[in-house]
Length: 180
Image (tube, rainbow, N blue to C red):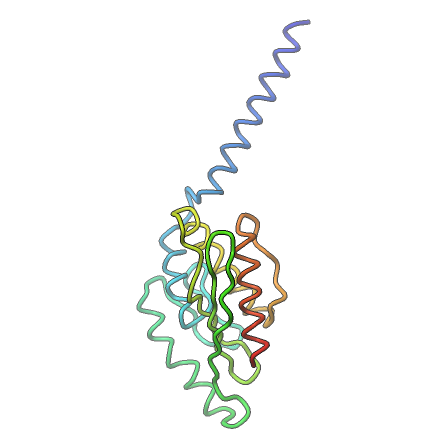
């Protein structure tokens, strides 16, 4: 009878260790492509997309490349494509959202509109009080940007593990949209 008790205890211990290891790996991003995420965060300055570095915006503008140089190449593209197509109705407008103080630091966005369409979202400030916050935001901000670009609104889901950043992102984005 005591052998059956040990089997359950050992099985439970193995399950807890495996789950803890899996959660730890996901939390700290071990085994994922950290450089592509970092490049995507740098590339969101002008394109607003690129969780893996090769996405496209919802309005057809080119996304960032896996290096930081792609963002400068795509900077003239949105204004060059939006201005000739509809000269009066869709003037490019850049609006800075309010700075939202979160538990781990401030977040502020700059949103580029072509008419009423969001063409780019740039994170001007993100929580960076410690390395963990920076690591979380390197992954969360591109995903939030991609969600906001596809929904064309601030009605996006928060990201698990980056709740405070997500809520601050949504508030800053909504304040920029309200200023339009």
